[in-house]
Image (cartoon, rainbow, N blue to C red; front, side):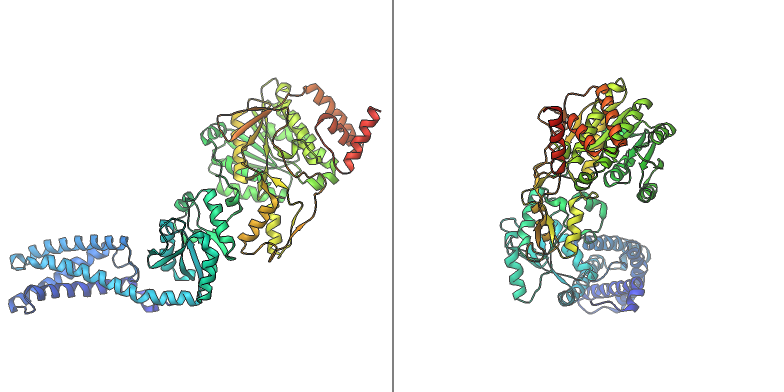
Length: 637
């Protein structure tokens, strides 16, 4: 790429001021020539000499104060022109006042206007000429060494992006043209770059440019205000072009980020969900958290850590991060302490199954609210290790509920999963049992503590979710493994999940289960194909998709509520409440005694059977189907 000489770059401001001084002298001299028809009388030449020194002494300091020695001569925009005019007007007024004072009426009055117009014309003409000299050479250098790109969107964002690309040669981008879906824009020119076609013709346009010797390596989506539907259509238009697709961010990110080109990033999976990100009522969340002591179990996990980050935004009095994985706890503690603003942060190592430790922490820090995010959640692993699932998901939750009741804390919220609805897996079964334990909590605490649960769909990017797995498989060159072509799941983002938890904590009266409206479920195979395309590759050509079959405990479809649960609206149209009949706390306590006995005996069959007795809608699969059927036959021959 072409670079300015080092001598000029080191002394840019002084050299620019010198150039302005030459222009000041030249415009004043030319003004006198024009005024006296190119023959300056001897007495007027003396006036010219005095005026020349006066102009330099007055105008150059004004230009320095306006920063006119700083801008690059190669760039010219509307802002630059307005700045030039402002500086010129001020300098001319100052020169006029100084001339009237030092020279008096002998100075020709018409020179004032001529000098102003000529100096303005000379400076702008010089800038235009320098830009006209540099621009073709920079374009040629970018075209030879840089990446060819198409900008999708010929609006304000696209024009701004083009301007920044041209102003920053280090980006090594060459803009080959625009794509735009607005009718009537084809053939129009934006800053000298043509709108070549609509988005639907992206593949044809890329092929046409390549055949002409203009390679296209990327398409940049310059549509920061596009709706998810518009973004999905634009992505669909770009997929067939077989190039990397990236985008500039939304309006909020643009306002926060400053420089447009620095915010170009790969299209995220969230862009393909087909719905707007859900925003919840932050005012009620803030009032429920500000100044209070909040404890998050599983606080170093993907959901727990995001909960901690968002809770910190609302100014709690103290944040207690409860976690048994010490390395992960160390990392989130370090991050939170760097971000915190006069909030006490307590990183506590502990296990939710340890009753004494839980009670000790709640008492020591005077905890007022608990967000329970600690859980085992991997379906196939829990099928193979049911006692561990029971120990953590069921008995750990029971320990927390009892400790919360004894301490009389204000709010207790547990994070559940859609896999708890009509469960077919041990993991889903244990989470449904945990829901029943939590829903029985209000009676056990005489209504002092509000116990609620939140059901999640699949959380994009969380630990163990399908998205990181697909990313690793794509990076390794494939294959991507999908269990079944018709498997569908509800998806939500990690921030959405955390906000739902915080919102539910302000709405719950006790015993409710909150669910976020996540739109329509998405096929996993569609998610896999979209991620392959976002990586710039072609599904089933560059990256193989391989079907592996359903794993133990998995379902093709997930549901959000049981048939006997009542649906109740909330003041937020995207948050729903499902409430079933609460279980008798004494029944739950007796059941807990039975399951603890099975755990002490390490009796997997009895533990699973006891859970199936409590959760009648459970449909066992694999080896647990036989275990449950044999138990039913034993009690009902």
